[in-house]
Image (cartoon, rainbow, N blue to C red; front, side, top):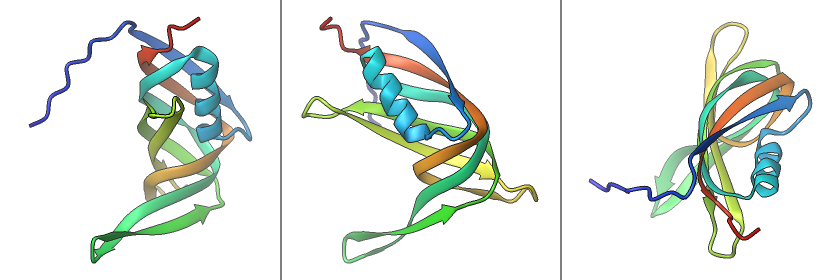
Length: 135
């Protein structure tokens, strides 16, 4: 079992309210860049969506993963989102989120979030693990 001991210089929780029409991915990237966040974990996210672009791993052939992509253009209740911000070797960051959302019928949809547009808004909490201290 791999265990990572986090030796962090910071440990703060950030709150971000996303407005109607705003992208979760772009908004999170923008927040990370403006706050100097290099690494963080999404610890809570709820709200509503008007569009969800998702991708699911649906199979594997000869060592190559196949993905199923879908764009859902309907009102969804954002029940949960988990993910992280990770630093890249080139100095950039990677935002990676998985979403669980409900249709009005209660049917759940979810998977890897390539993008999501907020309907009335969303509320996200981030646990900051590493910040850029070169200021």
